[in-house]
Length: 275
Image (cartoon, rainbow, N blue to C red; front, top):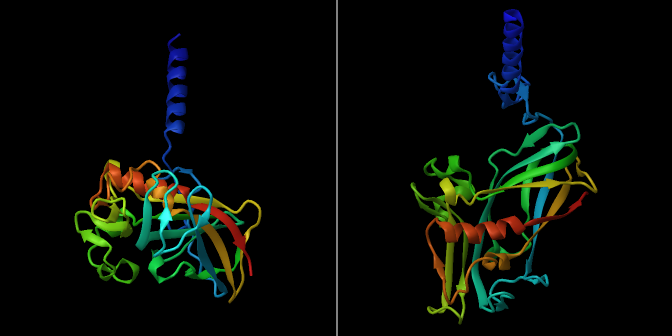
């Protein structure tokens, strides 16, 4: 009887150890290989040194409201839910951390992958991702906002330079989305939403995943292909009050999170355009 009990304990112990194996990347050839990982979870990322590369343009088409009307800066737009008349003078937001998964299941990460989209510079300015290894890609991930590491990394350059007016302080980090303009429905005649927050319950950084289900993204040497997304700035007020009630947000918090995430989550994949 004792032998049976001991055998049972050993079996249960083995099952327990098996079920508690730490997951992670177990391929030593990957850049994120983990010595502690005992079970591969498919997260391995590989550094490619291909000489043959092409360019990927990320092109965002902007629409307004549920009817999908054209969105334009410096133009009076009526919000379909609040009824507010809004004219945008500023609309900026960060998009970052682009990764592509090829048909072999390997991920390529774009280095220094931080872009500031500024619609005052025009609606037809694609984000250029250069140096993409030649190949067929089935999936893409990216972030809306700036990751926590960069929020606390001190003075930086490029898209993350403080000269762009998108940085609050070392404690509050980046303004990840800035929307400003005028409205006769606001008590002050204007609105200014500076949305941020990278930690805790009011983190607004949002990761997006795109599956190229109908057609692979094809990158060819010295050629440019494109991924088209659709964004709708009217989504800022889906769940947020009229500018007659709230016309300004300048700090992280629940109101900033609601506004930003409603816009972020509605950004959708449209199509692939291979060259």
